[in-house]
Length: 288
Image (tube, rainbow, N blue to C red):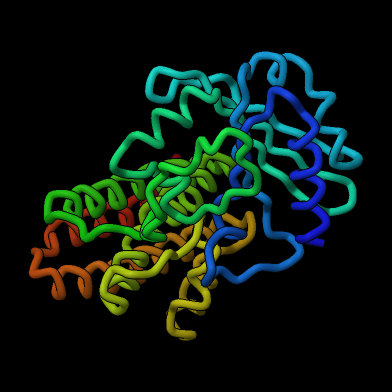
């Protein structure tokens, strides 16, 4: 499957006059990556003019029956416009095409440091004009979390506990969708995930890529900790979401204290205690 898809891309690019360079990036260009049939093909296509590709998406059909597609708007990068087509095909393949003008590739090739989308790993599929010859070699270090400063740590803890007050408000009101957003998205996907990733990096000397949206956490965490993460996710019932919020706080607190100890930061116990007391009061108070 992989060879067929890449061969098809190369053949198409070779015959398209305005396509000058094609780079494969991300997981399929990273030697240590674990791949399966759902792994995306992340492809950068450098062309003489991006507008024809932006205005007419018929060229996407060259690679199969398009099931659904999302198009990013044209955005500025180093003074040049670029955009992407995130394309799911009916046969199961998914190709994320990023269109660059040739001038942008030339500028990046002249820089001493690669952007993260190339530094994570890339391979040259086609280069008609040798535009990629001057690109720096990837370090494969992109997307590895950096150690936080103490200010960043304190800010994360404050944001986490501040978000919990929104959850409590929505729970008392019985507003399911906003409480799920604040609890499952912000408190967990944003705040808890970040503190967990810092804890993982401590054990691995800041050298691993946890994966987008926490997709690699299960493999990196102790089974008991992953079980705690699972237990923070519940259904729509109000009381079970109260319990889930407090379990989320308990897990966050434990991991955050471990991170603070390793990095010699102060954990804000007083903030923690005051907010938890407030949440408990909101839960048990009578009246609307």
